[in-house]
Image (tube, rainbow, N blue to C red; front, top):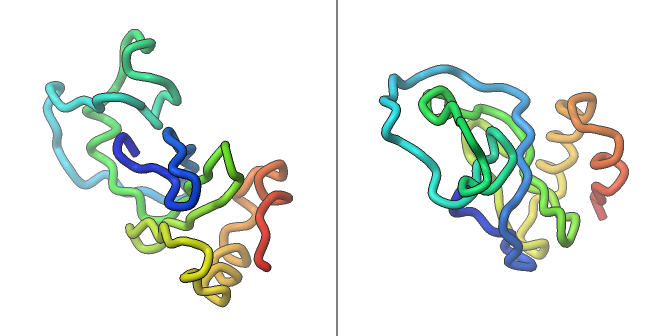
Length: 116
């Protein structure tokens, strides 16, 4: 998340919602994000104590990335963020994702999601 920007409007930082994750890695305390921490939701320079090693030990299996500037959303499916421009999106995959994970998406985000 520290390096991702919206492919449509180039906004940084993006917001992350994790629906499913696995603890896979053992990480030491020297690993840290450079600019933005999605785990603590804030600029690294403004955060006091962080739990970077805990965050880096997880692999996100399924989740949602949203752009607060343009309102677009990008699914994370089977560990892969699907961050395609609008004209390359697969509508049926988007519909399947919303059908499966819609109950985990906050209503204020879900109402902005357009499948058109």
